[in-house]
Length: 432
Image 1 (cartoon, helix red, strand yellow):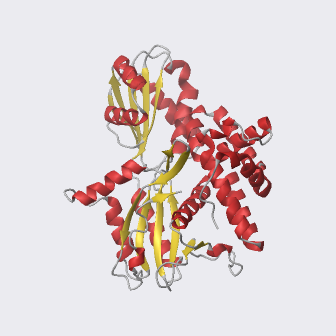
Image 2 (cartoon, rainbow, N blue to C red):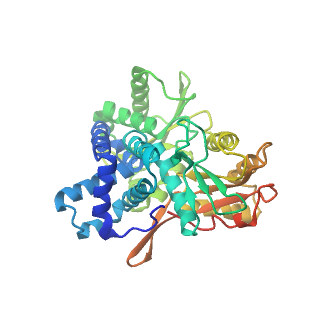
Image 3 (cartoon, rainbow, N blue to C red):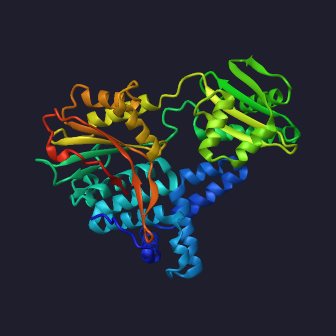
């Protein structure tokens, strides 16, 4: 049912069909709106490029169509729109395989995801990637929500692998962004950093110093705009004050750190993005917090970090979501597997976590701890596994072929009364 292979020569025709089925206004309006936001806050550029990558890629394809009239020219070999092209091909294959009300439901879901909700689009792409994985194994996969008997609003699992085990396998897919469980979202932090810059840049750009300012709020940023402006002014004044150390203001802790800017700027200029992260974390004494670094007009360097005194709750938030789905979205009449897509982990990072558990020398990773809680909780005999998937990477298979692949770390419950040996090794290789 689902398209699992794409040739670049077919991309113009695929885009043309997709735009007719879904309506190119969805991504055209989305991208236009985002570009206006970026004009107001340039710090949002990378965030939106990542968050709405499919919409931007579809807009890129719309531009190619306008320039070349649907002819398969060399520009279609650009990897930057492969994810959107494969997504479009898979959506079309689903629509073609499902008739009537199910197809229209799917069209509406795709439109809403692209136009309004990147998180829902990530969830849909995870479903498609999971279905593709099983189709490549030669399995038969169906969507319960596409069935004519489905009732709108009914909570049900996402996918059914029909021809595995004694009675099939139900799959529920949940996608988790890097913001899951964060007290301060990335978007909130970027808006605050831009507030600091836009309100006080005339003074900040004249600084020749290296200054890092770590801002720690009680729980979250102030809600009222005037209070955020007041906080941004405070942070800027402390950055320019020449002082060092920690100050407390109305529940906000501000730690000012001074450093030599020349070697710092030189290191930033020649290091990779991951090395940037390590360098900034080391400088500020923080870990995986929202952070921005700026150069000044006098070769100075400014670093701002924003965090909450309350710990982020990524894994516990994931656990709550998975437990709720495990209890309420499966039929309990056949085996079920939870599939959790972790957008904040790349394949190498997920492999590293798996190796920590395999070596056995350290304490179990959070993934192992929470997977055990999800599988072993009472009333979940129907669950036979929990699978964590990394974000996907494009990789060359041959000079002419590119594959998008994820890494999986899976935990199986062989003692389940629904267990079948056919479930072993289901996710040893995961590609989409």
